[in-house]
Amino acid sequence: MESLRTGGFVILAAVMLWSAAVAAAGAAEFVVRVQTIEETKAVFGQVESRDVVPARARIGGTLRQISVDEGAQVEKGEEIALVVDDKIALQLDAADAQIRALQSQLANAESDLSRAEQLLKRGIAPQSRVDQASSQVDVLTNQVTAGEAERAVIEQSSREGKVLAPASGRILTIPVTPGSVIMAGETVARVAGGGYFLRLSLPERHAAEIVEGDTVKVGQRMVSRSANGHPPELREGRLVQVYPEIAEGRVQADVEVEGLGDYFVGERTLVWIPVGRRDAIAIPPEAVITRQGVDYVRLAGEPDPLDVAVILGDRVVVDGSEKIEVLSGLREGDRILLP
Image 1 (cartoon, rainbow, N blue to C red):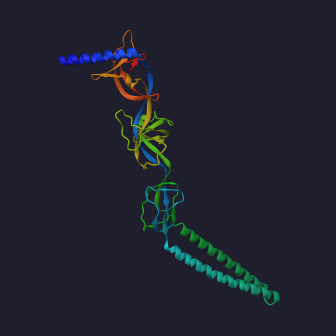
Image 2: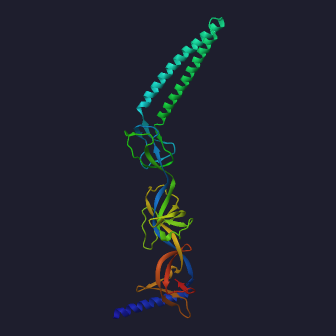
Image 3: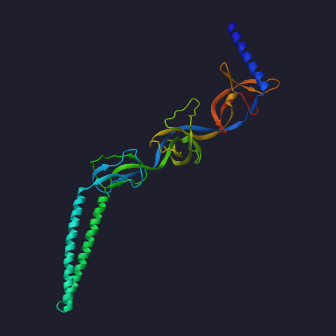
């Protein structure tokens, strides 16, 4: 019992000394006002790419080599893989042989035309022979041109064995391996491009409260909530789109954030999104005095300050500064002494 009295006297003496110090120093005052607090909800946002474009083989054949790995950054038009069709080399040889044969026939036809023209000048050959030889030269010339065009098509097919990146971005998956036999149009790789954003999925009760253009807070990678509900080093993002369809009781929204390029596609991170506003009383944390498990604030009064017990809520951010919400014990207009 004696120790309890001694402890009580010590606490009372400390409070009296603090009161005297406050009076002597002229403590600052904080006027209680009802303020609008933004309600936020923490949800997981999933990193998505704006475009996922398949890099397809343009010809059928055997996949000779793959030049990139999953996760590699590629530029549009960069070679990803090489498809080889052994028949193309044989087709080129056949086209070359056909062109050489036509060129030989054309050379003979031109010689016949030259002789027919000389005989026509001497009056030995008729004009019809010259016309026939000239027509044969034209036919063979066109056949050589057609053969060269067919060879150009085959050469283009051999060049199309290179599988090119359809867009600049990151390689997500490569579902084939070297040595695989693939068909024209088959997917060789999937490229994520066009930038990255966060896809949110919110309960439908918040559908009418979220607004495009709102600022949201985005946590860092692998972030976890701290004791006061707000993780450190939050980044700002902007709500750019709210989808008009509700599926399975949830509404989807997209958030733009700078610097998502180092995230994995599909990676999740916490996002604090505004879902409403309410009026509340919030005071600076340093105004709270805790004695024996009870929270007090000191009100300015005449002739002496008055300690009032309060019930506190969560810490909130109001006008850029951190404050603590007061659920009961204060009213608008009260003057609080700050240490």
